[in-house]
Length: 308
Image (cartoon, rainbow, N blue to C red; front, side):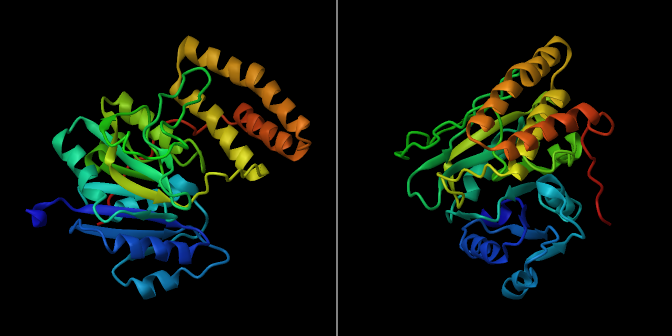
């Protein structure tokens, strides 16, 4: 029976973290699911030697890009080579339970109307603490949503399977036929909101987004991490506004942009000023300016072209 399980193509992106990626691969080598292929995309790491990944795990398909393509671009590079019925996109800074993959595959095998599924995710360095157990829907005006279970102690209260408002990019399983039908993640975001944008496009095509609480992944991001770098602030808010532009229409789009530009923008600016972080305020307004000045080639999804 196990030998009949569908092939899952696993894609993870490395950027200056080959040691961390090797830890992920070591964890993944212990899983009970018998039918996988693994792609590691090195996103043009400037201060790292990704060759160690291939040396330690020769069965891994290592792909090196010529420049940093961001989250979506890095993942997309591997897709033309993937042969699996399903594609698992998973962060390199994760570790997995040995039986985590079977429940995810089962969700998609049992219901072809499901287009994406994410597992339950705990913080690796904070035992039994939840990061993700599903999402609330993204509000069409504020472009905000909330991670269900965030910060809670995991006592099994989210060990169920249900529809969710959006997907979690740290670990998501997607049928290849859905990718071929809908398109790949758009690379215009570079970082932040691209998986939510992809989920929204997949939902609009008629598919459901699911959470599988019987599958568990550990994420090495710290629960107390507050990046608040100009780089993060720029791409986070650039992506938030861009998401509204790409996914809202008509009066809803107008209301959302009015909210983001005339209510959210002054509030965020004041918060940065009160924190004496003019660098973050400048990064925020660069994100706004980018959206004001970029109107071409920001819509649609790239199509998957198979390698022969």
